[in-house]
Amino acid sequence: MLEKPDLLGLGLTNNEAEIYIILLKLKEAKAYDIAKHTPISRSHVYDSLNILLGKGLINYVTKGKTKRFRITDPDNLINILEAKEEQIVKQKAELKEKIAVLKEKDIVTSSKVEVYEGVEGIKYILNDIINDGVAHKYKEILVMNSFSKDEFIKSVPEYVWERFWNMRKKYKIQSRQLFAEGKIITEHPHVKARILSKDYFSNKVVHSIYGNKIIYFIFTLQPLVIRIDSQEVAELYQKQFELLWKIAK
Image 1: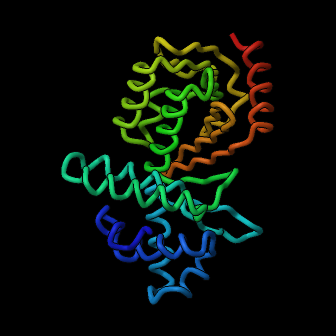
Image 2 (image 1 turned 45 degrees about the horizontal axis):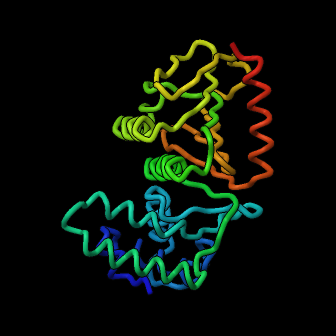
């Protein structure tokens, strides 16, 4: 079973690790309910939740006017380990075993709609796009209101952009991308691009479709990602994309 020392070893603070463990047990909870299960002050609970959101380790759904928090796929912890390279290889293997136990016991709540905040959330989604592409779970990525590199790196570090596009080139992951008129088109061997009037798009939002997943990238000072995993919704957006692709130049 995943325990607090495991999370501390990944670099999480004591507060972050304790809140993560609480969410494992509760499956889904309001910040107020989390605070009742720990001596951590309520203000520090909110601070730690925001940090965990930024690291992509938790997300939330809004029910009424209330946010309910829950952990994301525990494999996100592996992404943190990979950054530490050789000195944490043993720790990485141990964590994989414990995550497998979590999945076998169905402790983690599945979700159709997920919200990620910050750079780590963007990185997680981009990794998911690559992983699904390598696993041949989709034919191509469909993108509406595609951003150029210069637009992307205003909110996200340049290395994140470079890694994503290098991986796409390595695994020959194809895409069709609609750019708003006046934007710089990304030149890439696996990209087909067309131009459409900017009136069709919101300036700060990029829509991506891959397989049964629809992504809203919202690029502000604190980037936000919303992912919907639904075959029906994905098919609806694919039809919308095809209509726009036909009228684009």
